[in-house]
Length: 76
Length: 104
Image (cartoon, each protein chain N blue to C red):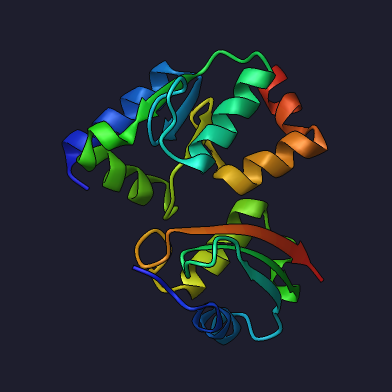
């Protein structure tokens, strides 16, 4: 159960095309990441809605193939 | 999610003003993210109820649907879903969490 850093980036980019993504593999195991994502799509949304946008972009992988992704979303 | 699980979740957040769905217990968290929220609440001297989803797989899957949120921990204050670990941490750092908890 793991997901490559690049795959995460591609999935997010697909759903949030203007996203500026900085992502780190925290443990070097393809399973624990932290990501900072900046996008115009986040503006006017609550943090919960912003994080949901990212989770939706990951197509149900969050909590399954992907165990941990610490998120920091920023409106641009 | 079946009706029994839905009712169970409704009851839990109804009865517990500050309800943390977590992996493990507040004393023995089984995951770093659950530990983080649990520690923040302890640090703020807040009385909260920790619900160990590892003991109940229906609840573990059900709460994800209930909140439309794919991960655990999940914090509810006064029946309102506040967020997961990242959001609660951010709210704590900005002081917003303290306000929400003071107004509960």
